[in-house]
Image 1 (cartoon, one colour):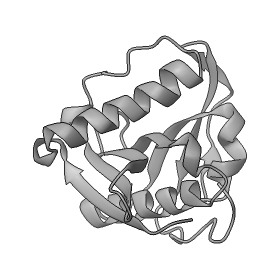
Image 2: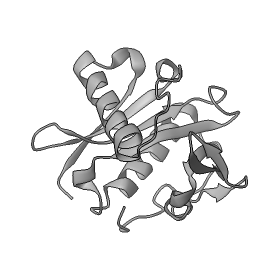
Image 3: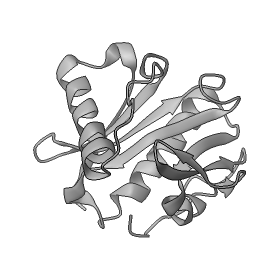
Image 4: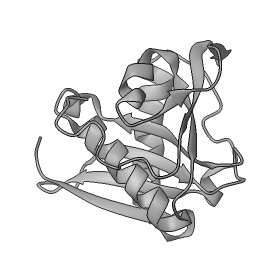
Length: 164
């Protein structure tokens, strides 16, 4: 994995070109690659902090996650829209992204449980970061999902060294 520079910003601090790149990556993966027509712009981006992982070599956006405060989507804080560019998959960047997102979420909103709505096929990935299922599989926008919860105080380096 090449060197990655991380930036964690509230919505209002995102420059327009950065916001455009974030929305383009989310659309590229969640809409085009996964062949899923869904409403990505769900009204939560303005409440979120946006974690961007950019190539240190050229500044290109390679990884992204949206972190939401408690009460925005769930009672707990939440991490969603977790995505890596196709060119960076298999390098461990997905796990690095989750470690960063967990650390940033705890730093911003304190030590607490974090809830996610994960694609069911990625349950094993999120288990490596101490998330446990709290629901049966359900369909969201035609894709199987599962709700998962990470208890407060779990170590932040789960998944270290694993490929993602």
